[in-house]
Length: 516
Ligand code: SF4
Image (cartoon, rainbow, N blue to C red; front, side, top):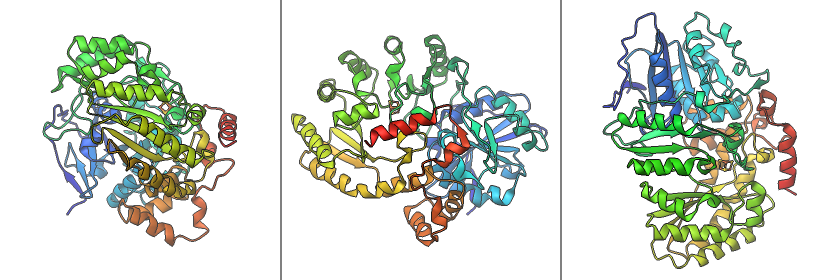
């Protein structure tokens, strides 16, 4: 079976652009299945934007993980005929998948060099730490590209595009040596937004049908464990008028009158209540991301339910008040209990809570006692598995105050997870969904990697995207190679490669405070 297959979908919208041979050909590659990839605003926006440019054509590629097949959505053309491939990587483990794809196509940078297609990776994970991609892709984008995407596309049409990439001072070619300053757009109203979003009529997207709306970027809270908040700093949001225009135009082509909000902190946007009421008046449904507990009022809860949301997702992260306040998630536990009661009254199907275990200096007994006390107070709930708890181990991420913790700390968290399970078993209205701590460990190894990690990733990817493969390579490497695993350096390697625009002292001081 061929690794790459042409698999066009029956889509809501498709750019049938008859390209000329001289057109610049850009591939947009998402290392995930189609139904997940359509949720990416970059995928949607880049496809629409590049196809509207004179003299350029965009072709999309997604990856069927289960069958290990790269699917071309728009063309049967040989992928080697592209001028460039833009790759979006939001999660660290995507590095392994993209490596497998490029390796199978014979396009890994370490073998291909700088011949076309030029491989350019970007996204939150890349902006945070591109070092593990050394020898995998040709160049990495640090930050946002809205205002330069056009120039970047045209540069790819040159015979030797690499000669021009130096003009983009937030793009690093390999080896990543010089410090690159993160680029971001200050006024979000000037940022690109897709209007004609595509999805397959007969293949429901992961978040369901509807118009994906980017309300804001960044987050005002900078929680101590949260990479997104730090890497997308500062908090910016679109104006209500601009947003409404996007919604109106986007819904003209959509099969359902439903918007799916993208925002790290939705109710930090000052006009959110007004916008929600306007949606309701216009009979438009809405889907919400996870929300901060303290923002939920009775009125908002009612409105969220009226807009068609059936599951309320909250992110308290810890039930221990002192810890919650230290990490940036201050809220009242009684308020959380009332919100859950409200969800029951307003007939939400269930409530989902995100919790993290493994904060240093937090006594496990205290954590478990709080959990038990919390569930005991909710014992009035009579619905089976009404409460879902997504339990994540603390994964130390670059550009967070916890970045100084080594990945190995995660391997000690089995006991924590087992204790949570034991308590939850006593209450039939709750179900625990833990994130596998070994995957979390693998994720941290990649997230906190350096240049040498890329060799490890290449080896791992050859065994497929599995923990078995991870451990197989992990156990086979010699002590010298193990040096790529972060052991808690005082000066993390990613800080040498990137200027995030945040003071280094902030991370050190806050870490010291958190472990004191
Ligand atoms: S509120 Fe959420 S998105 Fe914002 S910094 Fe905290 S965890 Fe991150």
